[in-house]
Length: 83
Image (tube, rainbow, N blue to C red; front, side, top):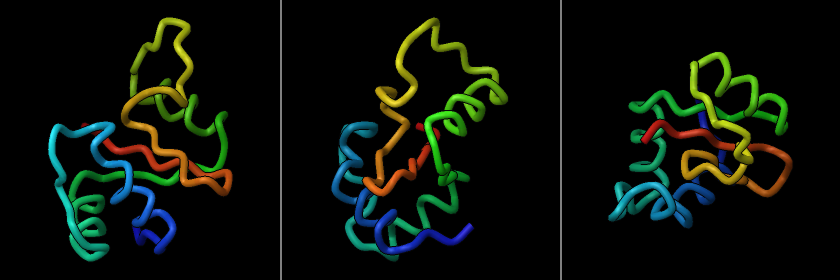
């Protein structure tokens, strides 16, 4: 999957919400990391909820968009990164 600049910037700016220290410093490093971890870009809350359900992740009523693995790109899309 290719990640556009907006997605890469979102990850770079917010990666500490999931990891204790930065895992990437440049867009190129971020793209490599996201490809390596099989991160996905989803286009709605419903797609994020469906993704978690398909992966067998039970959130027990929690707001899926508040999970550390979910990054709000800011344009209606969400980046989901397996931590």
